[in-house]
Length: 429
Image (cartoon, rainbow, N blue to C red; front, top):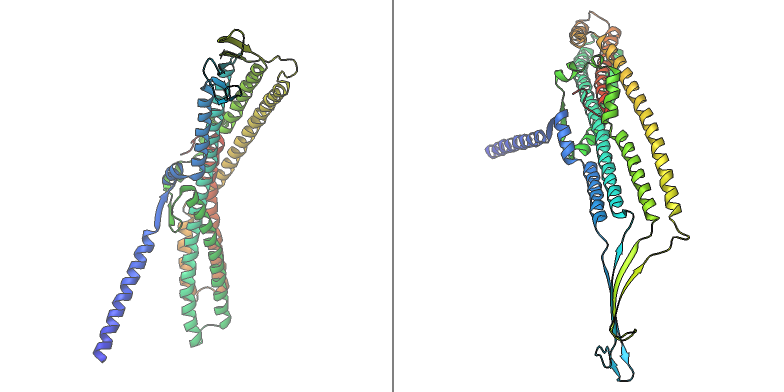
């Protein structure tokens, strides 16, 4: 029986090891390493908002097809239903029947068809610029969220290192407490710091999860995937905002901003609509050809006709006024858009320079030196060369300085993406 139980225990241990290996493998398979370029590629291919906007652009193109079509001819036919003299229905013979038929065609004057085509084509341009402006906004949201998540992940590593080292320190001091070598109040202070760090770490991880969810929505990645974001040192090193002149950024924005082009195409649309409404004030002509077997004089009557409304009361006055107002509104919107663009570029540029000056003032070896220092602090505290208060003060300073540095690095890279956003181009790659 003892041998059997040992075999069972061995089998259970092997099964547990296999299950653990499978679980670890499954978790590693759900981890996706992602750079910003890879994220942007997935975003362009799979983002649902962009796909919906693309459908709207396709709908606008379909309006051009509709505008190119000519009006269909109309045909009418009338037949004798019942002849009371012969008591027959639907008679068509010469002796006892009667029918008449006609065909007509509407002829649009004043170039209405061409003006409708021009109006629809300008609608396509507006839809395309709406698509590009949406892409510009979502791309900035993607890059900003990407860098925010990445530097939060770096800060999370700091918390993990501190929490793990504090756990070891707490365990060692609890052993010393049993031997009577340390005071209980020191254990409480270390435990309190550990709880504080764990709470802050949990809050940070919740923020990372929210950011990852937004990234997954933007790139259509699986919801159960864990994103391990990658930023190469070259991305930080190659960014130099002081190498770009403000006037160059402003010119780039005026040439590439989709929202500014959208405002300009809105004026073109309003101008084309005004031309169309002026043309709509001109009446259209309808030509017709008719045949009547016996209902007119002479019999076998064949006639040609023309029909046109007289523009005595309705000369399209309301639509003309609306079109003129829309044109003036579009011009005002363009001036407002240009002023907003200029302010956004200036604000982003000055903020980027301020952040860059602050970043350049930091010692590049700051983190490495601080890591060595905190390791020495922990060692000296264990050897009782420094007090608990000094140790906790160093620990808090280390955490605050590291988090501040990560936040500054994020603000710097976010400033880079904001300049790309306000200029509508990849000034900084």
